[in-house]
Image 1 (cartoon, rainbow, N blue to C red):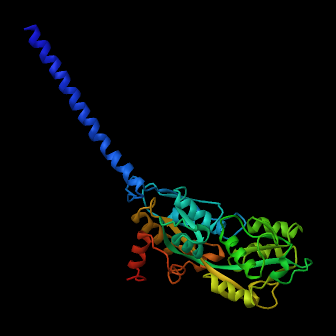
Image 2 (cartoon, rainbow, N blue to C red; image 1 turned 90 degrees about the vertical axis):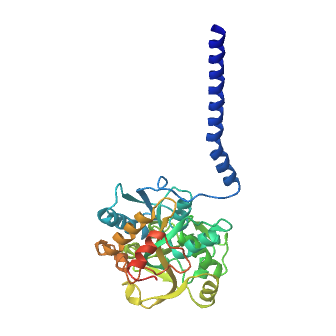
Image 3 (cartoon, one colour; image 1 turned 120 degrees about the horizontal axis):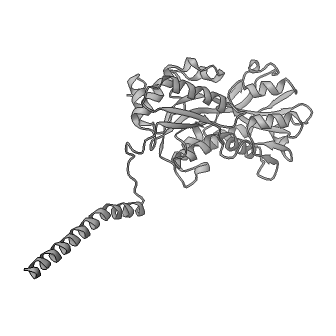
Length: 345
């Protein structure tokens, strides 16, 4: 009897071990499949667990247009987006390229960008050469960006060609300003090393220009720009034109368009100044912002943009909302809103 009981216990124990082993093998199988998929370069669609509601909005340097305008945009979103757990904080950054790069890495969820670097990111060109970024979507136009190449009286600089050998602020690394500045300088025959480049935001550069520590600075800014007006209270400001063959080169080799800065844009201007322009746009992560939340953000922002007091906020209207969207993918939530109001079919 004791032998039979012992045999029965041993048999039950062995059976339990077999079951446990089978269970372990089944649990590991999905992980093995997932690893194989990753090795093959596949990716899974975002799930509800991947989406965030506490978001960061990448702006630009504190002395440019993006940062103060982004702060107000965040305030409007926080005041009018009705979505459980929603909050957005506007943070300073390197601007366009940096914002999209951080979205690609999941470090940021919303970003302000010139529409041309956004196109480069999508197509794996320019600063994103060979590394396309596809996990973001267009969520609306912000304002037209105008290149302003600024110097002051006393430097002897009257043309962009005169910047050879000079101390020039070209904008922060990863900014639309720097990409455009390098293109403009190239159009005038100036390559890296032909000028002393300083990679800083327009606000800091304007202060150094005022103190005589720089000879010129590039700024892709709103028009008029408060920082330019502020500099003009201390020094006699000159805006250098982008014109002639150089302008033609830029138009042929980029999506920038020609613009005349009107003489009444600034009190110190006596005549219009030829330059280039692009669009500032809002983009959002398709990995970390759900369609529903993106819909609520877009709707709240553009239906309450009158609460933005920054001068460039006047461009954030329903009539302008698709400016700069050509060639870009829409965030599904923003696309649903644009369809709802009749802007898309």
